[in-house]
Length: 423
Image (cartoon, rainbow, N blue to C red; front, side, top):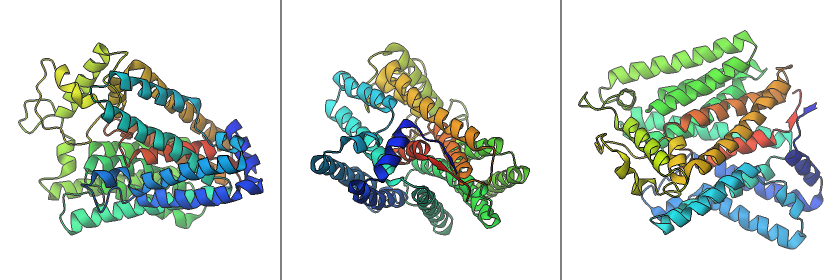
Protein backbone atom coordinates (compact mmCIF):
# COMPACT_ATOMS: atom_id res chain seq x y z
CA UNK A 1 0.00 0.00 0.00
CA UNK A 2 1.47 3.32 -1.06
CA UNK A 3 0.33 6.48 0.66
CA UNK A 4 0.82 10.04 -0.48
CA UNK A 5 0.03 12.03 2.61
CA UNK A 6 0.20 15.81 2.85
CA UNK A 7 -0.09 17.70 6.12
CA UNK A 8 -3.82 18.08 5.56
CA UNK A 9 -4.22 14.40 4.91
CA UNK A 10 -2.27 13.39 8.01
CA UNK A 11 -4.63 15.42 10.14
CA UNK A 12 -7.61 13.84 8.38
CA UNK A 13 -6.32 10.31 8.94
CA UNK A 14 -5.81 11.09 12.64
CA UNK A 15 -9.29 12.57 12.85
CA UNK A 16 -10.97 9.55 11.28
CA UNK A 17 -9.78 7.36 14.14
CA UNK A 18 -11.51 9.52 16.73
CA UNK A 19 -15.01 8.25 17.64
CA UNK A 20 -16.21 11.80 18.20
CA UNK A 21 -15.77 12.61 14.52
CA UNK A 22 -17.32 9.42 13.08
CA UNK A 23 -20.82 10.92 12.92
CA UNK A 24 -19.32 13.96 11.21
CA UNK A 25 -17.94 11.75 8.42
CA UNK A 26 -21.29 10.01 8.03
CA UNK A 27 -23.14 13.31 7.81
CA UNK A 28 -20.59 14.65 5.33
CA UNK A 29 -20.87 11.52 3.19
CA UNK A 30 -24.64 11.81 2.91
CA UNK A 31 -24.57 15.54 2.13
CA UNK A 32 -21.70 15.17 -0.35
CA UNK A 33 -23.57 12.40 -2.16
CA UNK A 34 -26.65 14.61 -2.46
CA UNK A 35 -24.54 17.54 -3.68
CA UNK A 36 -22.78 15.50 -6.38
CA UNK A 37 -25.85 13.75 -7.76
CA UNK A 38 -28.04 16.86 -7.61
CA UNK A 39 -25.39 18.87 -9.47
CA UNK A 40 -26.36 16.92 -12.60
CA UNK A 41 -29.86 18.45 -12.47
CA UNK A 42 -28.44 21.99 -12.24
CA UNK A 43 -31.38 24.41 -11.63
CA UNK A 44 -34.10 22.02 -12.80
CA UNK A 45 -37.07 22.24 -12.43
CA UNK A 46 -37.15 25.97 -11.54
CA UNK A 47 -34.59 27.38 -13.96
CA UNK A 48 -36.08 30.86 -13.91
CA UNK A 49 -36.31 31.24 -10.14
CA UNK A 50 -33.56 33.38 -8.58
CA UNK A 51 -34.36 32.00 -5.13
CA UNK A 52 -34.04 28.42 -6.37
CA UNK A 53 -30.75 29.23 -8.11
CA UNK A 54 -29.37 30.44 -4.80
CA UNK A 55 -30.82 27.56 -2.77
CA UNK A 56 -30.50 24.76 -5.32
CA UNK A 57 -29.67 21.36 -3.76
CA UNK A 58 -25.84 21.60 -4.03
CA UNK A 59 -25.80 25.06 -2.43
CA UNK A 60 -28.39 24.04 0.15
CA UNK A 61 -26.47 20.92 1.21
CA UNK A 62 -23.28 22.95 1.59
CA UNK A 63 -25.18 25.46 3.73
CA UNK A 64 -26.47 22.66 5.95
CA UNK A 65 -22.94 21.30 6.22
CA UNK A 66 -21.60 24.64 7.44
CA UNK A 67 -24.24 24.66 10.19
CA UNK A 68 -23.29 21.09 11.12
CA UNK A 69 -19.61 22.03 11.24
CA UNK A 70 -20.29 25.05 13.43
CA UNK A 71 -22.39 22.89 15.77
CA UNK A 72 -19.61 20.30 15.90
CA UNK A 73 -17.04 22.89 16.95
CA UNK A 74 -19.34 24.33 19.63
CA UNK A 75 -20.20 20.90 21.07
CA UNK A 76 -16.86 19.12 20.80
CA UNK A 77 -14.47 22.08 20.94
CA UNK A 78 -12.46 20.23 18.30
CA UNK A 79 -11.05 22.91 16.04
CA UNK A 80 -8.16 20.78 14.83
CA UNK A 81 -10.46 18.45 12.87
CA UNK A 82 -12.14 21.41 11.19
CA UNK A 83 -8.89 23.18 10.30
CA UNK A 84 -7.56 19.96 8.77
CA UNK A 85 -10.47 20.05 6.29
CA UNK A 86 -9.85 23.58 5.03
CA UNK A 87 -8.48 24.34 1.57
CA UNK A 88 -4.99 25.67 0.86
CA UNK A 89 -3.95 29.20 1.83
CA UNK A 90 -4.21 30.27 -1.83
CA UNK A 91 -7.99 29.85 -1.67
CA UNK A 92 -8.26 32.24 1.27
CA UNK A 93 -5.95 34.71 -0.43
CA UNK A 94 -8.19 34.67 -3.48
CA UNK A 95 -11.33 35.11 -1.38
CA UNK A 96 -9.70 38.01 0.49
CA UNK A 97 -9.05 39.83 -2.79
CA UNK A 98 -12.69 39.32 -3.78
CA UNK A 99 -13.84 40.74 -0.45
CA UNK A 100 -11.56 43.77 -0.81
CA UNK A 101 -12.80 44.35 -4.36
CA UNK A 102 -16.31 45.05 -3.02
CA UNK A 103 -15.08 48.48 -1.98
CA UNK A 104 -14.71 49.39 -5.68
CA UNK A 105 -18.03 47.90 -6.78
CA UNK A 106 -20.58 50.04 -8.61
CA UNK A 107 -23.22 47.68 -7.16
CA UNK A 108 -22.07 46.54 -3.72
CA UNK A 109 -25.01 44.17 -3.20
CA UNK A 110 -24.18 42.28 -6.39
CA UNK A 111 -20.49 42.07 -5.54
CA UNK A 112 -21.27 40.94 -1.99
CA UNK A 113 -23.72 38.30 -3.23
CA UNK A 114 -21.18 36.95 -5.70
CA UNK A 115 -18.46 36.80 -3.03
CA UNK A 116 -20.72 35.05 -0.51
CA UNK A 117 -21.60 32.36 -3.06
CA UNK A 118 -17.92 32.03 -3.92
CA UNK A 119 -16.94 31.57 -0.26
CA UNK A 120 -19.83 29.16 0.34
CA UNK A 121 -18.55 26.70 -2.25
CA UNK A 122 -14.79 27.31 -2.10
CA UNK A 123 -14.69 26.84 1.68
CA UNK A 124 -17.95 25.14 2.63
CA UNK A 125 -18.04 22.80 -0.35
CA UNK A 126 -14.37 21.97 -0.01
CA UNK A 127 -14.63 21.08 3.68
CA UNK A 128 -17.73 18.99 2.94
CA UNK A 129 -15.94 16.88 0.34
CA UNK A 130 -12.78 16.70 2.45
CA UNK A 131 -14.67 15.33 5.43
CA UNK A 132 -16.54 12.79 3.30
CA UNK A 133 -13.30 11.39 1.80
CA UNK A 134 -11.62 9.60 4.70
CA UNK A 135 -10.87 6.14 3.32
CA UNK A 136 -10.16 4.40 0.03
CA UNK A 137 -13.72 3.09 -0.06
CA UNK A 138 -15.15 6.59 0.35
CA UNK A 139 -12.85 7.86 -2.39
CA UNK A 140 -14.09 5.12 -4.74
CA UNK A 141 -17.64 6.03 -3.82
CA UNK A 142 -16.99 9.59 -4.98
CA UNK A 143 -15.89 8.43 -8.43
CA UNK A 144 -18.98 6.25 -8.69
CA UNK A 145 -21.22 9.17 -7.69
CA UNK A 146 -19.53 11.44 -10.23
CA UNK A 147 -19.95 8.78 -12.90
CA UNK A 148 -23.66 8.53 -12.12
CA UNK A 149 -23.99 12.32 -12.27
CA UNK A 150 -22.21 12.72 -15.61
CA UNK A 151 -24.11 9.80 -17.18
CA UNK A 152 -27.41 11.36 -16.07
CA UNK A 153 -26.38 14.70 -17.54
CA UNK A 154 -25.13 13.29 -20.87
CA UNK A 155 -28.04 10.87 -21.31
CA UNK A 156 -30.63 13.54 -20.60
CA UNK A 157 -28.92 15.93 -23.02
CA UNK A 158 -28.91 13.37 -25.82
CA UNK A 159 -32.54 12.42 -25.23
CA UNK A 160 -33.80 16.01 -24.96
CA UNK A 161 -31.83 17.34 -27.92
CA UNK A 162 -32.03 14.47 -30.38
CA UNK A 163 -35.14 12.72 -29.12
CA UNK A 164 -37.36 15.74 -28.54
CA UNK A 165 -35.59 18.35 -30.66
CA UNK A 166 -35.18 20.76 -27.75
CA UNK A 167 -32.69 23.63 -27.74
CA UNK A 168 -31.79 22.85 -24.13
CA UNK A 169 -28.86 20.69 -23.13
CA UNK A 170 -30.65 18.33 -20.82
CA UNK A 171 -31.04 19.84 -17.39
CA UNK A 172 -28.74 22.72 -18.39
CA UNK A 173 -30.48 25.46 -20.32
CA UNK A 174 -27.11 26.89 -21.35
CA UNK A 175 -24.84 25.03 -23.76
CA UNK A 176 -21.84 26.75 -22.17
CA UNK A 177 -22.59 25.73 -18.60
CA UNK A 178 -23.34 22.20 -19.79
CA UNK A 179 -20.05 22.20 -21.67
CA UNK A 180 -18.11 23.20 -18.56
CA UNK A 181 -19.91 20.71 -16.32
CA UNK A 182 -19.49 17.75 -18.64
CA UNK A 183 -16.12 19.02 -19.85
CA UNK A 184 -14.73 18.58 -16.33
CA UNK A 185 -16.49 15.42 -15.15
CA UNK A 186 -16.46 13.36 -18.35
CA UNK A 187 -12.63 13.17 -18.75
CA UNK A 188 -12.23 12.59 -15.01
CA UNK A 189 -14.66 9.66 -14.92
CA UNK A 190 -13.56 8.28 -18.29
CA UNK A 191 -9.90 8.30 -17.21
CA UNK A 192 -10.85 6.52 -13.98
CA UNK A 193 -12.39 3.62 -15.89
CA UNK A 194 -9.93 3.54 -18.78
CA UNK A 195 -7.01 3.11 -16.36
CA UNK A 196 -8.74 0.28 -14.51
CA UNK A 197 -7.07 -3.15 -14.67
CA UNK A 198 -10.55 -4.67 -15.05
CA UNK A 199 -11.25 -4.91 -18.78
CA UNK A 200 -15.05 -4.63 -18.43
CA UNK A 201 -14.70 -1.06 -17.14
CA UNK A 202 -12.83 0.19 -20.20
CA UNK A 203 -15.91 0.28 -22.51
CA UNK A 204 -17.68 2.44 -19.92
CA UNK A 205 -14.84 4.95 -20.06
CA UNK A 206 -15.04 5.01 -23.87
CA UNK A 207 -18.82 5.51 -23.79
CA UNK A 208 -18.57 8.39 -21.30
CA UNK A 209 -15.90 10.31 -23.23
CA UNK A 210 -17.49 9.65 -26.64
CA UNK A 211 -20.96 10.54 -25.33
CA UNK A 212 -19.67 13.81 -23.88
CA UNK A 213 -18.14 14.75 -27.25
CA UNK A 214 -21.25 13.81 -29.23
CA UNK A 215 -23.44 15.88 -26.92
CA UNK A 216 -21.10 18.88 -27.08
CA UNK A 217 -22.71 22.06 -28.33
CA UNK A 218 -19.78 24.38 -27.74
CA UNK A 219 -16.12 24.66 -28.60
CA UNK A 220 -15.34 24.75 -24.88
CA UNK A 221 -16.86 21.33 -24.24
CA UNK A 222 -15.17 19.83 -27.27
CA UNK A 223 -11.72 21.15 -26.35
CA UNK A 224 -12.04 20.46 -22.62
CA UNK A 225 -13.07 16.81 -23.03
CA UNK A 226 -10.43 16.23 -25.70
CA UNK A 227 -7.71 17.93 -23.63
CA UNK A 228 -8.57 15.90 -20.54
CA UNK A 229 -8.47 12.66 -22.47
CA UNK A 230 -5.24 13.57 -24.26
CA UNK A 231 -3.64 14.46 -20.92
CA UNK A 232 -4.58 10.98 -19.70
CA UNK A 233 -3.12 9.43 -22.83
CA UNK A 234 0.19 11.25 -22.28
CA UNK A 235 0.68 10.15 -18.67
CA UNK A 236 -0.35 6.52 -19.25
CA UNK A 237 2.48 4.25 -20.45
CA UNK A 238 0.25 1.38 -21.56
CA UNK A 239 -0.28 1.51 -25.34
CA UNK A 240 -3.53 -0.44 -25.26
CA UNK A 241 -5.04 2.27 -23.03
CA UNK A 242 -3.65 5.01 -25.28
CA UNK A 243 -5.37 3.33 -28.22
CA UNK A 244 -8.67 3.14 -26.33
CA UNK A 245 -8.46 6.85 -25.55
CA UNK A 246 -7.78 7.71 -29.19
CA UNK A 247 -10.69 5.52 -30.25
CA UNK A 248 -13.04 7.24 -27.78
CA UNK A 249 -12.03 10.68 -29.06
CA UNK A 250 -12.33 9.58 -32.69
CA UNK A 251 -15.76 8.02 -32.11
CA UNK A 252 -17.01 11.10 -30.28
CA UNK A 253 -15.79 13.59 -32.87
CA UNK A 254 -17.04 11.43 -35.76
CA UNK A 255 -20.48 11.24 -34.14
CA UNK A 256 -20.46 14.99 -33.53
CA UNK A 257 -19.54 15.72 -37.15
CA UNK A 258 -22.30 13.44 -38.46
CA UNK A 259 -24.89 15.12 -36.24
CA UNK A 260 -23.74 18.65 -37.10
CA UNK A 261 -23.87 17.86 -40.82
CA UNK A 262 -27.43 16.60 -40.47
CA UNK A 263 -28.49 19.68 -38.51
CA UNK A 264 -27.99 23.01 -40.37
CA UNK A 265 -28.64 24.93 -37.12
CA UNK A 266 -26.10 22.91 -35.15
CA UNK A 267 -24.84 24.65 -32.00
CA UNK A 268 -21.33 23.30 -32.41
CA UNK A 269 -21.05 24.40 -36.03
CA UNK A 270 -21.93 27.96 -35.09
CA UNK A 271 -19.66 27.95 -32.06
CA UNK A 272 -16.64 26.77 -34.03
CA UNK A 273 -16.77 29.80 -36.35
CA UNK A 274 -14.28 32.60 -35.86
CA UNK A 275 -16.58 35.19 -37.41
CA UNK A 276 -20.16 36.26 -36.89
CA UNK A 277 -22.99 35.29 -39.22
CA UNK A 278 -22.26 38.33 -41.39
CA UNK A 279 -18.86 36.77 -42.23
CA UNK A 280 -17.29 40.22 -41.69
CA UNK A 281 -16.89 40.83 -37.98
CA UNK A 282 -14.84 38.73 -35.61
CA UNK A 283 -16.99 36.58 -33.35
CA UNK A 284 -18.22 38.59 -30.39
CA UNK A 285 -16.62 36.11 -27.98
CA UNK A 286 -13.13 37.14 -29.02
CA UNK A 287 -14.03 40.83 -29.05
CA UNK A 288 -15.18 40.35 -25.44
CA UNK A 289 -11.84 38.77 -24.62
CA UNK A 290 -10.07 41.87 -25.92
CA UNK A 291 -12.38 44.10 -23.89
CA UNK A 292 -11.51 42.14 -20.75
CA UNK A 293 -7.81 42.53 -21.51
CA UNK A 294 -8.40 46.27 -21.88
CA UNK A 295 -10.12 46.35 -18.47
CA UNK A 296 -7.20 44.50 -16.88
CA UNK A 297 -4.79 46.97 -18.44
CA UNK A 298 -6.70 50.08 -17.38
CA UNK A 299 -7.91 48.86 -13.97
CA UNK A 300 -4.97 46.62 -13.10
CA UNK A 301 -5.26 46.98 -9.33
CA UNK A 302 -8.91 47.83 -8.66
CA UNK A 303 -10.59 45.69 -11.29
CA UNK A 304 -14.34 46.07 -11.73
CA UNK A 305 -15.08 44.29 -8.41
CA UNK A 306 -16.23 40.70 -8.01
CA UNK A 307 -19.23 39.88 -10.22
CA UNK A 308 -19.41 43.39 -11.70
CA UNK A 309 -17.65 43.00 -15.04
CA UNK A 310 -20.82 43.76 -17.01
CA UNK A 311 -21.01 47.25 -15.48
CA UNK A 312 -17.73 48.25 -17.10
CA UNK A 313 -17.12 46.05 -20.13
CA UNK A 314 -19.12 48.16 -22.61
CA UNK A 315 -16.72 51.06 -22.00
CA UNK A 316 -13.67 49.05 -23.01
CA UNK A 317 -14.48 47.94 -26.55
CA UNK A 318 -12.76 51.04 -27.88
CA UNK A 319 -12.85 50.80 -31.70
CA UNK A 320 -14.06 47.22 -31.72
CA UNK A 321 -17.75 46.72 -32.57
CA UNK A 322 -20.25 45.77 -29.88
CA UNK A 323 -22.57 43.44 -31.77
CA UNK A 324 -24.72 42.26 -28.84
CA UNK A 325 -24.54 38.70 -30.15
CA UNK A 326 -22.73 37.19 -27.17
CA UNK A 327 -24.71 34.38 -25.58
CA UNK A 328 -25.15 33.99 -21.84
CA UNK A 329 -22.29 32.30 -19.97
CA UNK A 330 -19.93 32.52 -22.97
CA UNK A 331 -17.08 34.04 -20.97
CA UNK A 332 -13.35 33.50 -20.59
CA UNK A 333 -13.01 32.70 -16.90
CA UNK A 334 -9.32 33.55 -16.74
CA UNK A 335 -9.72 37.01 -18.25
CA UNK A 336 -12.93 37.68 -16.33
CA UNK A 337 -11.17 36.90 -13.05
CA UNK A 338 -8.42 39.38 -13.89
CA UNK A 339 -10.88 42.01 -15.06
CA UNK A 340 -13.01 41.72 -11.92
CA UNK A 341 -10.36 41.40 -9.21
CA UNK A 342 -7.33 42.96 -10.90
CA UNK A 343 -3.90 41.48 -11.32
CA UNK A 344 -3.73 40.45 -7.65
CA UNK A 345 -6.93 38.42 -7.93
CA UNK A 346 -5.70 36.73 -11.09
CA UNK A 347 -2.38 35.90 -9.43
CA UNK A 348 -4.17 34.39 -6.42
CA UNK A 349 -6.44 32.30 -8.65
CA UNK A 350 -3.39 31.11 -10.59
CA UNK A 351 -1.81 30.27 -7.23
CA UNK A 352 -4.76 27.95 -6.51
CA UNK A 353 -4.40 26.31 -9.90
CA UNK A 354 -0.62 25.92 -9.62
CA UNK A 355 -0.77 24.49 -6.10
CA UNK A 356 -3.37 21.83 -6.86
CA UNK A 357 -1.97 21.20 -10.34
CA UNK A 358 1.46 20.51 -8.88
CA UNK A 359 -0.08 18.21 -6.26
CA UNK A 360 -2.00 16.32 -8.96
CA UNK A 361 1.14 15.90 -11.08
CA UNK A 362 3.18 14.68 -8.10
CA UNK A 363 0.56 12.03 -7.40
CA UNK A 364 0.67 10.87 -11.02
CA UNK A 365 4.48 10.61 -10.94
CA UNK A 366 4.61 8.87 -7.55
CA UNK A 367 2.04 6.25 -8.54
CA UNK A 368 3.17 5.70 -12.17
CA UNK A 369 5.45 2.78 -11.27
CA UNK A 370 2.44 0.48 -11.00
CA UNK A 371 -0.64 0.82 -13.17
CA UNK A 372 -2.34 -1.93 -11.21
CA UNK A 373 -2.67 0.05 -7.98
CA UNK A 374 -5.80 2.00 -7.15
CA UNK A 375 -3.84 5.17 -6.48
CA UNK A 376 -2.81 5.31 -10.11
CA UNK A 377 -6.45 5.35 -11.20
CA UNK A 378 -7.26 8.13 -8.74
CA UNK A 379 -4.24 10.23 -9.70
CA UNK A 380 -4.84 9.84 -13.45
CA UNK A 381 -8.52 10.70 -13.14
CA UNK A 382 -7.83 13.75 -10.98
CA UNK A 383 -5.18 15.01 -13.38
CA UNK A 384 -7.51 14.57 -16.38
CA UNK A 385 -10.32 16.44 -14.62
CA UNK A 386 -7.98 19.20 -13.52
CA UNK A 387 -6.57 19.81 -17.02
CA UNK A 388 -10.09 19.75 -18.47
CA UNK A 389 -11.25 22.33 -15.89
CA UNK A 390 -8.41 24.69 -16.78
CA UNK A 391 -9.28 24.43 -20.48
CA UNK A 392 -13.03 24.71 -19.93
CA UNK A 393 -12.43 27.93 -17.99
CA UNK A 394 -11.30 29.54 -21.24
CA UNK A 395 -14.79 29.28 -22.71
CA UNK A 396 -17.15 29.40 -19.74
CA UNK A 397 -16.07 30.37 -16.24
CA UNK A 398 -15.83 27.70 -13.56
CA UNK A 399 -17.05 30.39 -11.13
CA UNK A 400 -20.63 30.19 -12.33
CA UNK A 401 -23.27 29.12 -9.83
CA UNK A 402 -23.93 25.40 -10.24
CA UNK A 403 -20.55 24.81 -11.90
CA UNK A 404 -18.14 25.96 -9.18
CA UNK A 405 -19.15 22.98 -7.05
CA UNK A 406 -17.61 20.64 -9.64
CA UNK A 407 -14.36 22.59 -9.83
CA UNK A 408 -14.05 22.55 -6.04
CA UNK A 409 -14.79 18.82 -6.07
CA UNK A 410 -11.77 18.27 -8.33
CA UNK A 411 -9.56 20.30 -5.97
CA UNK A 412 -10.80 18.30 -2.97
CA UNK A 413 -10.20 15.00 -4.77
CA UNK A 414 -6.64 16.00 -5.57
CA UNK A 415 -5.96 16.96 -1.96
CA UNK A 416 -7.65 13.91 -0.48
CA UNK A 417 -6.21 11.22 -2.71
CA UNK A 418 -4.25 9.93 0.28
CA UNK A 419 -4.36 6.18 -0.15
CA UNK A 420 -2.85 4.57 -3.19
CA UNK A 421 -2.93 0.81 -2.99
CA UNK A 422 -3.16 -2.31 -5.09
CA UNK A 423 -6.73 -3.40 -5.67
